[in-house]
Image 1 (tube, rainbow, N blue to C red):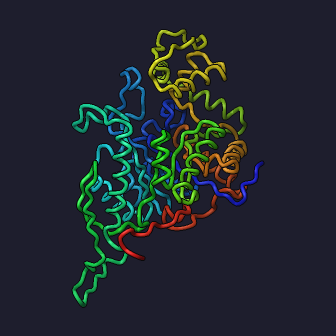
Image 2: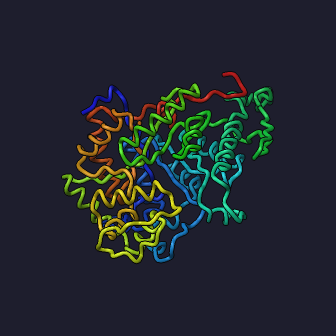
Image 3: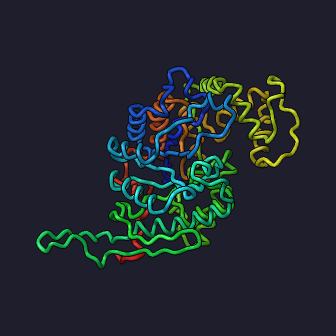
Length: 444
């Protein structure tokens, strides 16, 4: 096994939806309502904390997904809690695990976002993280009074300015602004208050923020874009990146690219943790784990799978022979890389249209399927080979898939010395090994 030379894995848990797999809610023993049941979600967060996970991560959608009703009616991801409301409730039920929420720079105002994250950071004792997204879903635009979607690069330009405004608002008050001198009757020192007065191409925000500086200085900045604009935004601003590299070679290329951009900008590459999404299925043997995966995939209804496959191919697949091989697919204006990945997968694993539809309709990215030792081998290889700094773990079904990971894989990672046995600190920054940002307006 490659040497990891004291490197430690960072592990996030992808918990919205609680499982990305379309068949998860139908798996034997799974909670069908896990995505929208608070007592269950509280238990999951406490289990993850017992397993010393860095963070509980919530993706978010600002619309019901636009897919044919035949497919949509089979999806367990139709509804979910609003992230801040849920994470504020989970803050009171946990002590150490980070709480990361997605908030869009396209459909929200920076003052709202700065205030919500500062509040979550104070409520949780310094455990908040902001996943910056630019929202690419055109249906979301319709829910916010916009007839059409904002163009890709313009969304990123706005996001970059948005980041500057939000972090500027978090720095409105010096850390020691609130003297609360009862004798003198002085609550705060006016010299320790900064008014932002931001006027830029996209945003105009006066400030200051009406809440004290967050415990972490700033909540941890998380990002997920893999496009050219996304990689550049990550190199400039992100402290955690949730990647989507499907193979170690792709992971190494992404890792080298983003960390290389950081060096050019004068940022220390260790100030960013790259955590690709990883779907993990645990078994007593590798064969048993593969059978679990196959059974899980078989629970994806054909109507649902074929809709996902048609979308990925940019071509209507509903007329194909379900039990035959994937026919030749003509060019279209769908995402070329996504289309080619699906065609390559079908050829590489010799899948029928039905099997391919189930795989694409469930989860077709990076997966570790095997015994705790096999899974730990794979994770260690990525860590040692600079493919990642850890993973954003996706569970196959709840609660079983989560319990398997915490009870069986975590002890194996700890035995190898590549994952913590106790949290390093009280805040998400301390546990991730990230420095606390200095206030840009006030010397420490």
